[in-house]
Image (cartoon, one colour):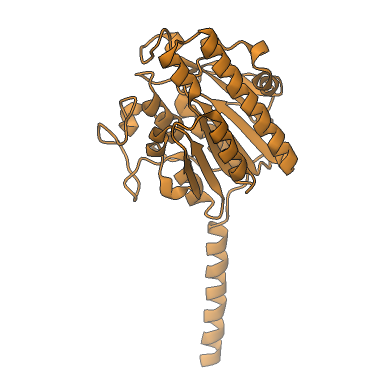
Length: 302
């Protein structure tokens, strides 16, 4: 009798283990994507996009999904919108309200067990514990826009410029991360110092485009480009030497996605910054938190 009880206990324990393992199984990308590389450029306004001056973004556009009408939240400033891009919800919910917010100015409508409104890095970490994630940026405000502990490598090279961002990004991409975020800050700096739409500002956009081309080439050399989705977004535009107003040249930004499983064509659905991370989760097959309000863009090939 005792032997039968031990045998039954062993069977039940085995069944429990199998059920737990199945319950913890990592999500699967609906298109088999293994890597997402998100490239962001601060102050890269859609109203200043000339595709012929941006050959690499133009190539991404021609081979992927895109719109020049993705909208920021208000005010059309940096920290509030980078946070919005990363947390899948508007500022009324996450609580960031200013260009340099480092924490919510109003209480977030929801926080997780770590005390944060959930961001894309944390959601991916919880869903895929073994994934590798990295973030490279040259404005320290970015580091306050997500849960740093969810990321394997946070590379803060504040005010070092585009070339240093690129070199740091190459080292991170060499590790073939599941999710990488790469931020270039120079377009915003040039806009504030010289002016949006000036020749110097247009040159800053072209320089970012050059680095996008180099990153794409590096992904190809690593042998992972065919399994990768590459994202490009910005936080806001501008005019004169400023931004933050409720006008379209301040609010509209480019949104370009290409790579494995991404269909080709213009995104015609209404799109806002809080849709960006929702789309990242959909690419990886990860369910988004209830508190998010972003919707995945219709970019996945059927």
